[in-house]
Image (cartoon, rainbow, N blue to C red; front, top):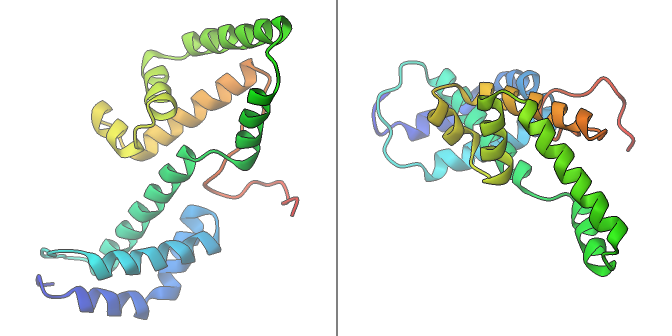
Length: 183
C-alpha cells in the first residue's frame, strides 16, 4: 500500500468487518467489546497521519484494533469502580477509630509481606502498573518483554496478593469467566 491509501484501509475494514469482529471476539472474550474496538479503530484510521508501506493490510487492521483494545483496557484498569469510589467516600465520612487504624496497618503489613513473596520482576511490574499507573506497553519496553507478558505477570501478582489478603480478584478485561453473569 502507498502513503495515500487510508481510504483503502477503511474500505478493507468495512469489507472484512465480520471476520475481524469474530477474530477480535475470540481474542477479547466479548463480541460487544470487539465491535466497540473496531469502531474506535475506524476513528483512529480517520484521524491518522502518514501511512507507510503495509504488506498485509488485514493484519495491520487487526494489530491496530488489538492496540486500541489494549489502550482501552489500560485506561479501564486506571479507573475506579463505583463501589471503590463509594468505599473511599465512606472512609472519609467515618471517623477513624483506633481499631480501624490498627486494622488498616495490619492490612498494609500483610500486603507488604505478600509483595515480598513475589519475584523481584513481578513485584516491580505490580508497583509500576498499580501504584505508578504506567501503561503496560511502557512497562513491557522497560523489561524487554511483551505487553501480554506484563499482563500475565500482573495477573499472577494480583491473584497472589488477593489470596494472601483473603480477597477475591475481579478481572475487568479478557476472556469471559465460566461463571454466569449476575445481570
